[in-house]
Every structure is written in structure tokens, then in C-alpha cells.
Image (tube, rainbow, N blue to C red):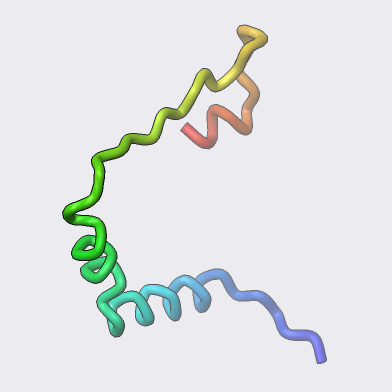
Length: 58
């Protein structure tokens, strides 16, 4: 049987799960005494010309 993928339904169920099990709160507690870190998003393009996929992502 083929089931249609419904991204809205999936997103709603994931949000409900995270809220019900307080996932965000648990993660924040778990890492509160850990080392600080940062995410470095490197140069978006090396050729000097932006690709439309990169532009949409920014």
C-alpha cells in the first residue's frame, strides 16, 4: 500500500513529540555545563558566483 508523505502532518507530529517529552528543555539541561561552541558556515561559493541554491539557503 502506498502512503502519501504529508510534510505538514509530519512536522506537527514532531513538534507535538518535542513538546510532550520536553526535548528542548532536556537538551538545554544536558549541555548547560559543557564547552561553548559555535558553528562556522564557511564561504558560500569559491568561484565568485553565487549559486541559486546557496542564495535560497541563506
